Image (cartoon, rainbow over all chains, first blue to last red):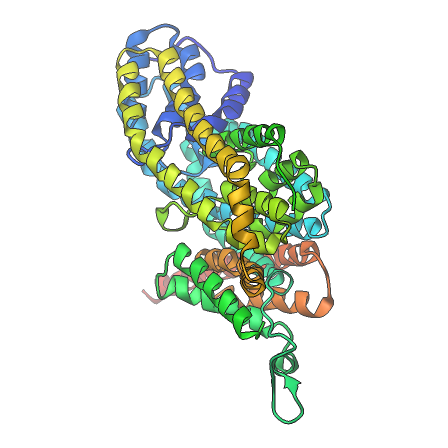
Length: 263
Length: 265
């Protein structure tokens, strides 16, 4: 049953903007299902008007578990709206959605969570270090643009639909690879500036009373912060330690070093 | 040492409420320590402290969200309490970062409670969905959204305004070694954020780039990472072009091989 209403560009703009609420009503049981459904309602109402039966069926079927990256959620909404408009079978639409949200989450996380976040945080932190408001203001601006870009994701999902998914997944490897290089290099650049791991002047050795820190500095400046990051990485990756345990461990270590007078 | 007035406490509550609304959306990233701390600093009349505290907390709480699907210590409350503790106790932001951890954990538990309890909200929405009542469905979602943010704001108000004296007394009773220990730890904590990021991003192929970034920062003396990020973009692009070329070359090779086989037959 195809609808008579034609989705306009401005409908998609509104869908994209309104989709910022995609994660409200989050629960462990259904994750983003409520917000996801809620975001689409104004657009869906344009298609079905006051047809309660259609709306009830739409809401019920879309309330299944979903958990994906925000921008990708908006993309999926565009896709769903285009299929609803074309009168596709709703079970089929939901199956497509269920098959896509996982892979899309991986892609979205690679772009936004693992690339944009560390890079924007790194750049803005270095601007903010001296107390300059430019840091937080730029941060707010970057993420404002990111939120607004969801208009584009809604349009992309609507116009390209499943075609876009195959194009995206073809390029997903290249994108993830590029994001990895960028992210890893920035993390490398952050280590010397943001992690202070140095022994104090008081910790000396030998007859000359050279500081222990000077040995490390002679080997390579910042070798201790670098080694420390790799240690933390090792604890997470190989020892599966929890974030809390590592944070507590660092605090205990810091206090111990302070009492020993080594740092 | 400073005191937070009732007006400031209430304003802080509003700041946290707004940022908590965003935290549930994850849309504008106002829930990140950098932004929460900035706004809180403005309310407290010490913007610079807010910016510095936000910068320290931001890096420590990088990458803390998606790893393993667990709920990590709450970045919003961590950023918020880092400023509040630094402001009320007069200690540096690095020291305050470590002391903010209990509050970040408290907010984490609050989040887990709501994420579990909101199964009831799912039931309510199911009913509204069956009835085809879009208005009711939307109102329930918004209600859940505001209630959770409200709870977060109340906790923030109690922690910042209500507990300021106990926190002050508690921290002031610390021997200097202990305070310094927290500072030492605070200076190391960004390694947690970076370690978590590497856990997801680092692999055998891109590990050389970590060292390139590290050496650039160590030996060029740039004090922000923007130049490094630009070089990284250039390198990523070179890598991309090279890979496309390799792909095309191997495709061509396969085509040639295919032809040979056919000739052979």
